[in-house]
Image (cartoon, rainbow, N blue to C red; front, side, top):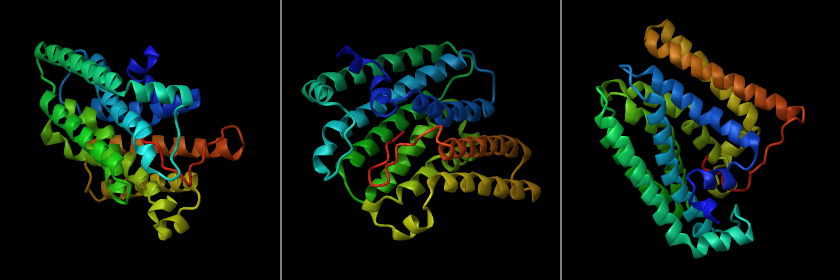
Length: 283
């Protein structure tokens, strides 16, 4: 079962099991991250595509450690756990847990060394050490997310979703320019996802559950509402032109994506795996 040692395999095998989910994951994460990050670059960076790709491998290899930890250890603490591995794979990963985790840390280290070497040959340096700090913070939050089974998980989920969405920004964008793209990224997905998490029965937020009865309609309303807010902010010069253009692009993109998804589900072309009584996957 060498496949469990390959970067991104565990993510795809346990969280993105269909071609549609892989495609959707790229539309929700990779494309918006790439657009926002490249938009706020203050200079032309050689090997941007390569560095961006390596950063994805590093971050998601580390994230997979949290997934494995969740699927092998945390499930033992839950009354109704979400089982993502078949019996054979579960026992293999469980019996080879240390080896798999150690290999992932080793590959992460190798990718970081490669990233640093590329960085040394750049005229304009990437922000290597803030990226390292973000990785450490991410690992700590995922550790506590898997250890604790209470409302703290809402906070840890929000932090994990945020770190997962902003890590390319910390690697490529200057700190003086960082605030707005980070806020944009948080609103684009982590905030929405956290609101959805609050509807889960195990957190007992009845007001959320009552008000958000249809997630697909809520997602459309969410992006349309923020599109209106951003237009008003731009009209009254609260938001400058540069920030407005990328924001309206991202919100329009997600509005169209959510409307398309809603129509596909409504017409029976695409069926969602409903997890109203289970933990949302961190994807």
